[in-house]
Length: 327
Image 1 (cartoon, rainbow, N blue to C red):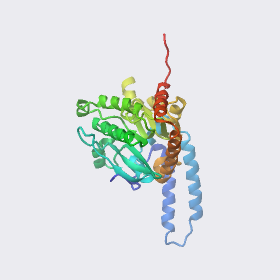
Image 2: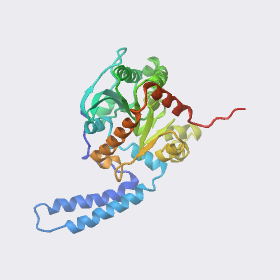
Image 3: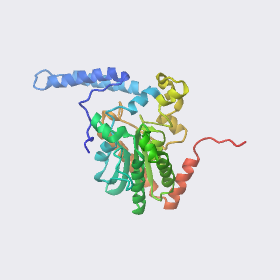
Image 4: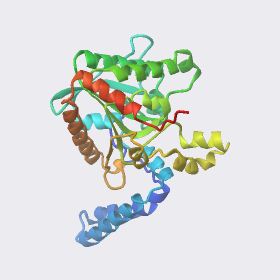
């Protein structure tokens, strides 16, 4: 699990984060100077920390949908394995779809959440170029979805809850993936997930792109991190189709209603999971702690339902989405 780690040494800033990062750099410099020096900078550091907190709160409370999309794609944002290492114990990764191979864009296995055995499955991106090539930038092939389904069936057999974490630009659209049945693999996952007789929790932790996300997204409860996105197409793809101009991606993002607040209002998701001030990439441990408590709470509620009720609740949840007219 070479990707686990916060990559804090990497410098990456979004345009609207620039002022915040400048203050944070000043704070870091004062702390560095105070080590081994007789000069006390504690008061200056305190004032700057307060200024940074107020500025961050002001900026992040007014993010546009396009800016929130950028936060969801932040390369320092915690990925699936970062959460696994923080919210679970005894994680055992299981490999392969038993048909073609092991797709490293999807990781899954057994782990314990507060002593309870749970099957975790999630998309996994890489931190470096080399890791992203191995993980295919978090874009699964058909064998990735078939591996996920194999693990879900295993969970049902042994009566274990399933927790999926979604973070993908979409399913891989390459020729090989299409030849091996990409659309069929996604469709089968949708069908089979709807029938599983164990609790299914879904969390969108970053990007939730198209069918590549939905193939892990049929759950009794769907949670969404505050700065994540979930949509039928990327803003760039939408802009290219509608206006033949990818520079209109910010406008497309507004029209897609892809952020958590929009999707909560539309009834697509069940809860918005708050992130640490400035986004999940600012504090991995705090974000993991918040998510762990949300997962435990929802699992406890779903434990009250029988297997038949779980299937019925899931069915009704997805049938209720959208607006239909007969005529």
